[in-house]
Length: 111
Image (cartoon, rainbow, N blue to C red; front, side, top):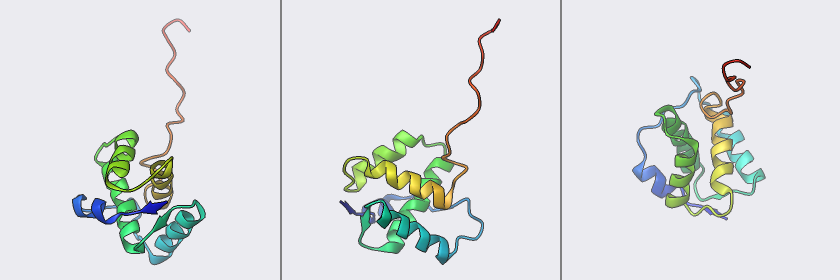
């Protein structure tokens, strides 16, 4: 599967991540995790920028499903590639923005 992040980068808003000190080590870990997950890319710096853009979109209130659709529309993800990319991006650059809500469901009155 081929990840073409160049198109997404061209249409992306400025990128900001939760990590106050994004380091090359974090970027290298992200790229290794992408490879380990079976996701390929042409340019590591563009893949990192796209991952940080995922966090920027989440920070602006874009839902995970909207982010996934945008990744599928702009990049050549197949199967669950976009979802994998989102999860890896979140883990590396913005874990608090895209973590599942683990709060208990509200109870109905009288329960």
